[in-house]
Amino acid sequence: MSEGNLREASVGKTPAAPARHLGPAGYLVCMSGIVGRELLRFVQQKERFLSALVRPLVWLFIFAAGFRSTLGVSIIPPYETYVLYEVYVTPGLAVMIQLFNGMQSSLSMVYDREVGSMRVLLTSPFPRWYLLFSKLVAGVSVSLAQVYVFLAIARLWEVDIPPMGYLTALPAFILTGLMLGAIGLVISSLIRQLENFASVMNFVIFPMFFASSALYPLWRIRDASETLYIVCLLNPFTHAVELVRNALYGAFEPQAFAVVLGTTIVFFALAVVAYDPGRGIMGRRGGPKGEAA
Amino acid sequence: MSDAAQGPAHVPALAIEAVSHAFGARRALDGVSLTVPAGCFVALLGPNGAGKTTLFSLATRLYATREGRVRIFGHDLSRAPSAALAELGVVFQSRTLDLDLSVRQNLAYHGALHGMAGREVKARIAELLALVGLADRVDDKVRTLSGGQSRRVEIARALIHRPRLLLLDEATVGLDLPSRSAIVEIVRRLVAEEGLAVLWATHIFDEVRADDLIYVLDKGRIIAHGTAREVTGAHLRPAEERAPDGPTAALEAAFRAMTAARAEDAA
Image (cartoon, rainbow over all chains, first blue to last red; front, side, top):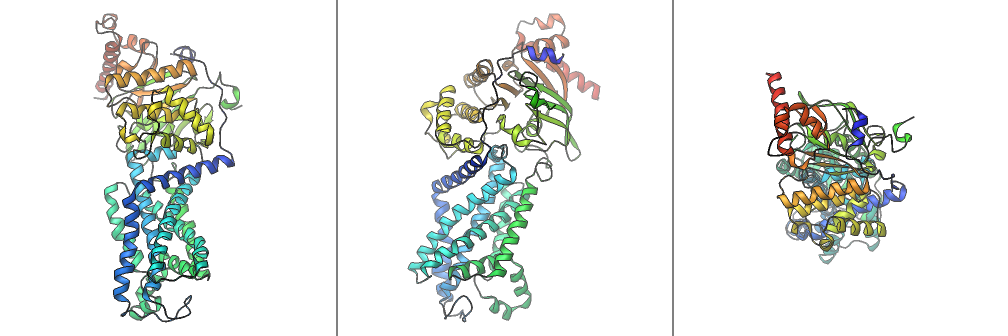
């Protein structure tokens, strides 16, 4: 059949191309839509909010209280005097919330891919890197809400942070949230099935958290093992914790900032490649999941 | 001059040209070419596993086109993805609504993904829900909708940014007959009244009319195209075409004859 014949059959009128919304304002609308959806989902998942809070509070109320007498913390920057162990672990626990949240976002990316809603996101006309960045911002927004509620509760538990510290720590929390979210994005691109996500807990979250300065100062770790000390230094989570710890007391730690920023850029670039239809995982792994090919 | 610059009368809504795709060693599509003229309903017929969803994934840029070319209203999907995707609405085979959000929230989210917000998106939501007959369910959670209602919401969602081309991948699978009929009617009305171009992938023959353009996809290759009447006539003897079960049964018989012939050739 000729193309001429093709045009004759079943043809209605053709609408003119409507106005599109792909300018700067459209970009903002797109990001606010993605962030808004994530916040809506978060608000509706009350158990997710509670579990995100209970986890660090258990560490703070039980673990830290128990170890208060056995783990002495000498005067190390940014602290100007001896501090309670609870005070020492609080920044690490706050970043732990972001670590879990980053992995939770990654879990939701895998879920979205399985149920198909990822397709809706990726068929948006905005650039794919921007869509992924918006997803990151959405995850950070959720984690900030969790972190500040945790810090407010911790304040009732004798964890006194200078009032200005809550403000000066905000940029640090945003950056650490972006870093952990970017790591989560890369992980989500590597996971084929939701069932495989449990291994992320064992191979990513726990090693990152424990092999860091979240629970013990680096000098104490060095006393115990030089090798473990080097591992902790190489762990970006250590630098995220130190960036936040310093920021909470109005101090700036340039090395931690550089490592966190660099890690964010590297992992975000990897995520963009992984979700690129031409180079990444999509379209190579055995066809459309859950649908007839 | 690019196709996009030639004006709407000359530019097909969707032009797929010699597209091939493989998953590892498995070739899912092999040199597929297909045209959806602007304002036209085109059916893509094929059994499960024929490659329809892979073709949709390429046409929506979920997968990169490595061999061949996909153009949407003249915009090359690889070179100008934003312009191409802005013209496109998609209803995927799997359900892609957020069950825990309301109908309005789902549609508003999709509007935002296309840069639409405020009064404009609110008015568009009202307009589209009236079109699909779900205006009274706007604040209900999607979880509370039936399968057919969810599908209609997905169609409304796909149209929210006023695309000129709509792709539907097995949109009626798993639905009862009244729901299927309602969805087919809505889509056909959009073609007739709004001039929407539609590519309708299905393996259900009674969704196709005799004067519809059809492409038959089997094992990753287009094995026939033309109007349903022409395809039926080319592959059945006249007596079979006038079968008492009507044109749907004749089309199905023609389809079976085509795919059986290919299976014999392969053997």
